[in-house]
Amino acid sequence: MKNQIKKHFSRYVEFNDSEMDEIFSKLTIKIFRKKEYLLKEGQVCISKYFLTSGLVRSFYTDNKGSEKITQFALENWWVTNMESYIKEAPSYVSIQAIEKTTALIIDKAALEKLFIKIPKLERCFRLITENMLIAIQRRNDIYLQMKSKDRYDDLIQNFPVFTQRVPQYMIASYLEITPEYLSELRKK
Amino acid sequence: MKNQIKKHFSRYVEFNDSEMDEIFSKLTIKIFRKKEYLLKEGQVCISKYFLTSGLVRSFYTDNKGSEKITQFALENWWVTNMESYIKEAPSYVSIQAIEKTTALIIDKAALEKLFIKIPKLERCFRLITENMLIAIQRRNDIYLQMKSKDRYDDLIQNFPVFTQRVPQYMIASYLEITPEYLSELRKK
Image (tube, rainbow over all chains, first blue to last red; front, side, top):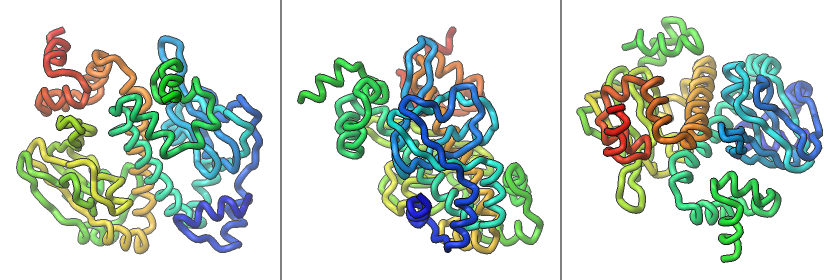
């Protein structure tokens, strides 16, 4: 698992073995059962989660009581609720395992200390955050303006693994279409 | 202007006078006339812009030829197209001044050098990026799911200055409603 996160970091910054030991010593490994929550709406999110295996979703319940899925994340992705994490305020989303999921967890307090000890790690997280921002911005700017069929095509083209591993009703929620319409799109 | 950006940075990190001199020496001041472009779609965005006065919009043209406004920014905000900036690829959005706008401009190459010389600046930009991400994520997750009337109410409550300074047809584009419907909402 240390090699997996080292490989992930190396996309941005190279760490030597003693730096990796230092970072790894601050991480907690946790296994979440299918349907278990990494974070529940209303809790303060104090951690960032690096998924070494598995699949999770972020979602909230709208005022009509229906679940809105805002994000999926799988192995080698970071997941957190950034707003709750930064503002130390209750999260408006829940994060839940769709499959059995293993995460390396780093708490904010520990990470802040590591940033001071290993400034390269701060660079690494600046770059990770910039890349998260790009993904969210593109979804915001373009994706949600596409027709549902184009959104579905975009999803299967860019993230075929989601359509294989995520239950269909969740895909429909993410695409903001009905499960019936998704089933029609899949037949085509 | 140096005091204005120093005050802005101090929300995240305090810099001493010699650090501020060093940073400020790498910034270019530029005044954009109303309707002038900071960035045109198709150009590579090599800079981050800190607005000391004025108001700009980011927008793209959809495949039906209509302009979609994705973001407004005003004094004391940073604006850039992050995807183009990071990937050094052509931008899919344009950034245009709505009012006469003054910007402090920092180029990517200069900023990367400054990060190495003044690591606190990298912390500062990590925190700025995290805050940008929160704003974009909230718009993505919740705002676009609201009814048009609620989106309008949210905008006038949180950013009353936009509804005073931005032309109505641009507000309508941002809210993804027709100008006629916006005019109805304003009468209520």
